[in-house]
Image (cartoon, rainbow, N blue to C red; front, side, top):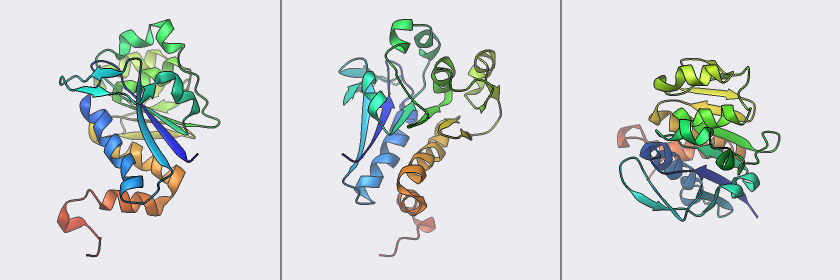
Length: 193
């Protein structure tokens, strides 16, 4: 069966918050040779349109996140309205006891709404700090915050830290090193050719 990571998208998602983790996480299979490693984009429709206007296909529906080993929520301007949509939020049945659950930027609001950040340190994009704090999280100014099997990242490039956490947890530090090395500027790579 292997390992499955679900990346949750919706219309107006922030492009880099999906595509950076998508690329890094897929490199476990492409660079690391793990054929049992599966990354899929899940949503409520067959396609979703990014904030920059790119229409992308999904590989499954949000309900499938319940069966994934790891779930990452993207961000975007629609997150505050989505978390108030009970029908949408009820489609998620996640378990931090058996899954890694993470978010990028305003995606932390999904985790808070699901009750995963109450009383916990968390991070989010600066414009969503007050809202996240009002939902019971202890908001901190860090790019990456981990509390057991739940993690939040803020600032699109923090997607590297969030992806590394997933890879480290499910495939080990050596795999993280291989994946990150494969995207470094050439003068920083340690790959021997």
